[in-house]
Length: 156
Image (cartoon, rainbow, N blue to C red):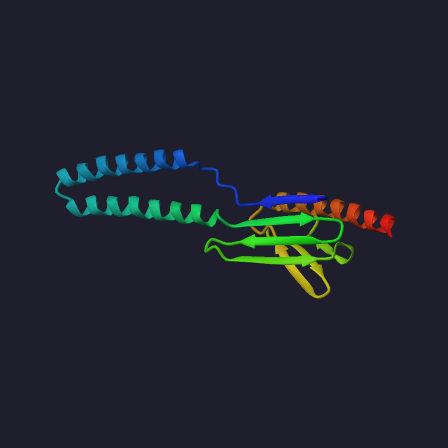
């Protein structure tokens, strides 16, 4: 194995952090809601509950999108990319390393895409990574591809 990478989106809020944040949101909303309820503005209490529900649903959706992954594996004779999405669907692509082209803008911008292409087929890799991470991945992949093609040239 010349190159083996498992890519997934970064989630900076841990599950414990999620629980703490939700407890704080419920606590603040409850206190403020009770203040408004005691002043006779009872509809505001319901809106605070709705606010907590929206925060909860948004964070759950964000965590769900973190289930996306990509596996990139390079051997001397094949590069494979496996991708899984939030619904559990999987896709796989394979390329011959000798003909594979790795492209990305340099200098990298936010909208820059890392593309692997060969023989009219292409796949975008690491769309969820930061631009700098995509550029680092492209450089590492190019180096590994160079190593693979050099090893194949020596073997033949």
